[in-house]
Image 1 (cartoon, chains in turn green, purple):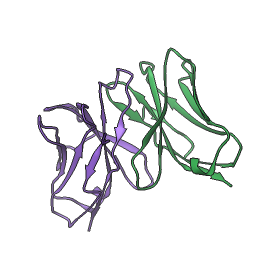
Image 2 (cartoon, helix red, strand yellow):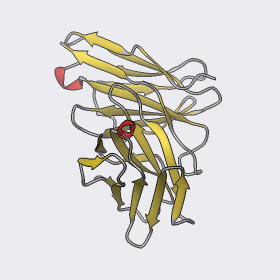
Image 3 (tube, chains in turn purple, red):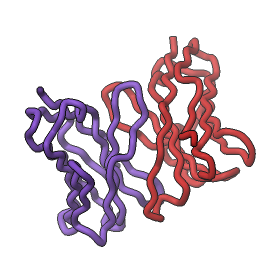
Length: 109
Length: 116
């Protein structure tokens, strides 16, 4: 059973615009969430995280929003750049790290 | 300040052979995780280990797969009698604390296993 879900397998955005990647989870006990970025033939790299005591965390162009009641989080990238083109995984930590299936973002120059 | 080191990066095995994948965690990290990524799929959890202990192996196939993280040395993921369906990228990650302690997992570059 997939406890963390990313329902959009792919997303295309024009350079300079906002990219919004979405993630849903099922376990209300999760209280720490992470986003990872993965380029082809490389391992995922940690991008940004948020704990459940917050509803927003910002780091430069990246902002993660958490809606606990809806069990939903999103990653906003603004402005999007071609170098942001990658697969983005959302994850939740519990007794292990649970990953979504990823969203492939393409930023079009 | 080395990160997670996995070797080999690429491994080719014939059907029926054994594959051994190695993972050296970040220095000081005692929590190791293995994930598998099949083509066109996401990261699938396999096993979570601490030094000398398997904490959660709920994602490991019941047969042919085993993992260890000895007191000294790297973590090893062993696949016996490989089949074509085992072809995938295998990622190892480590963390300095348990997953429910607001910590991040740091990933290696992965080992791409090809079974021919």
